Length: 211
Image (cartoon, one colour):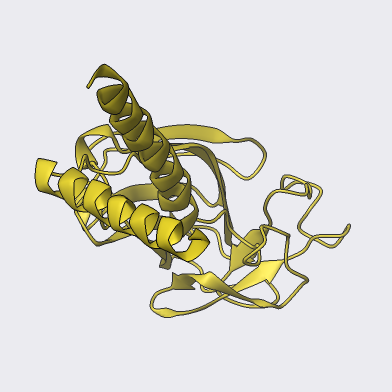
């Protein structure tokens, strides 16, 4: 009996760890300006993970091009994105950059995001699912850190950054996520029973095939 209980606990632990890894990979939260593999996109490529005011966001692979110099330079982790391929936009306008991710099956009480942003000009607000997080500021010459530990919802979540272009000229946003914690919700007892029953049936089937 004790060996059976130990086996079940180990089985549940393995299943939970596996689910945790799958959940984090499947959430779909990406740095700005990267492809599905996390590699920075070339200049002018549409970033499929972000929108600007509901339209396309374009990666700006600096490679020594203006306005990089005053802007933070390239790295292998992220790239700037902009509403245009030239990074120039309307003076006085506020642009909303948004990305969505899926927390279906995640324990929302343990969900946590940490990251950092740089922007031209400052971020006026960061919103999760339409609710302000009370975060603002930043600059294009340095990173500004942020954390999110509440306000998540089951299913699709939307994270939005409002960036003002107060002085005209170049505008853009860069975001990197430095810590993502998404733990699968603990299955109900009947789920464990179904899992064990399924494994038992599979074991019987395999034994019969060997015979």
